Length: 225
Image (cartoon, rainbow, N blue to C red):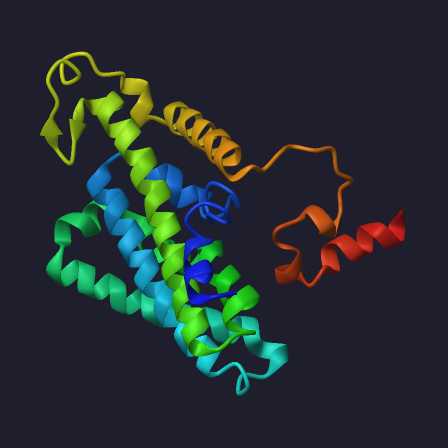
């Protein structure tokens, strides 16, 4: 896979939110406004980039048995630094993101890319992968936030839109509106990327997280059957 392919796969083909269905909680929570969505996307991308680079550089040093705790400590350190920078230079953004900024530590996109990619590839490839996945995450947030803010508040980045400002659909800024937009975007991306629903048996073959769990959870079920 070339560097270009490595980067672009995260935009649509393997979009972490709309294809792999990762990071759903912050996606639904902060996508009520474009500014907060961009802030979350930027913060997550910085953490993803830094953690991928460091984990890839130390992949031959970190013992296999304690790799997950080590990854979490590294990710938590980068999240803490990003949070301190946001608090110092963008307090309004920090207030809008609230608890979801420190919760980047447990964002499954970050840990998933560390385990599935950075742990097995060189530093440059891991950095490009992080940028691609971060861009895909930010793009998904931006699309959702644009739809929800325009229809729900009649604004975009706080700028009022004529007609919609007086005739907005308030439910779009609530949880039902978030799930509705989320589902529609997933359907559109599946159509664009050519993913077709097919009847599959439950198992590791169809699970995007199989490599993370090491097929341990599925293995127990298959043996029981």
